Figure 1 (tube, rainbow, N blue to C red):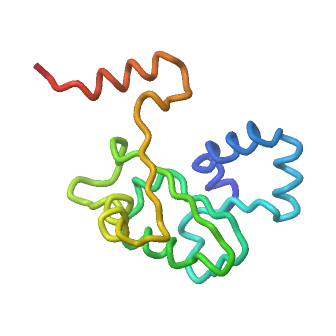
Figure 2 (cartoon, rainbow, N blue to C red):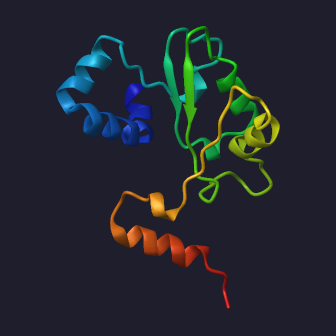
Length: 138
């Protein structure tokens, strides 16, 4: 199973390696201090006293997003990241991230943060590419 999902989880492993160092990240994962799990394997779990991150959430369905959000247990915090300009769902399928914002934006205990092209920390060229895609065709 791990071999099948590893290519999809590579960006998460890369981020952990960069933030913690390869050795520390591997040590924390081997001790189950950090657990990297595909969304499909979250059903039925309750995550108490955890810091939970859902990455690439723009590609969740509303049902998947609800399932994820209802896994949050006592003492936990959740962070959901996604870019609604990069939705890869089939045409006509609603993004769980967009649906969650619509349904949950008035809940006082939740916060939504929005980043723009000035927040890009990749190569400076990426900011120009984003600007080009944001311009209307003339």
